[in-house]
Image (cartoon, rainbow, N blue to C red; front, top):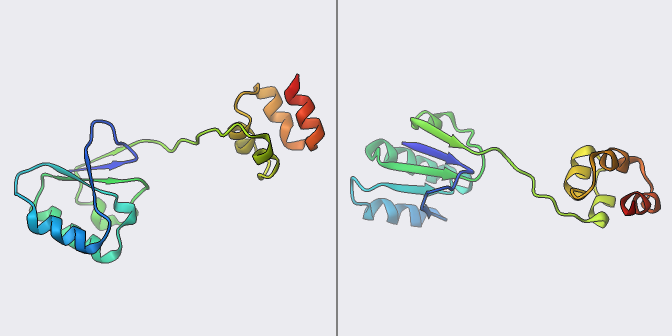
Length: 136
């Protein structure tokens, strides 16, 4: 059994949204077929309890989660955890940067097209100076 955390490469995920859907999946499951069930980060406690019993009886079931799972009982059921690191997508917006917290991470994500030298100076600049700095 595997747990995929933010890793969706070469995996077909059967997304389950509520308790009724999970119960229907369990009732119609054909033993021995490999499935990846997800997204565990959206499961409530009732769904976790149903899933725990189900994966103990069916070791061919893998799981997917878009966020880290903190449930130690559920984590103990998996033989392998395939995990991708968190990545922050840049947005390239000066206006959003000016409204952000002005830390280095904000400068990195909002001003990605700029050099590192400009990014390091950007958090202390006033809006007019920032536009001047980025126009160089």
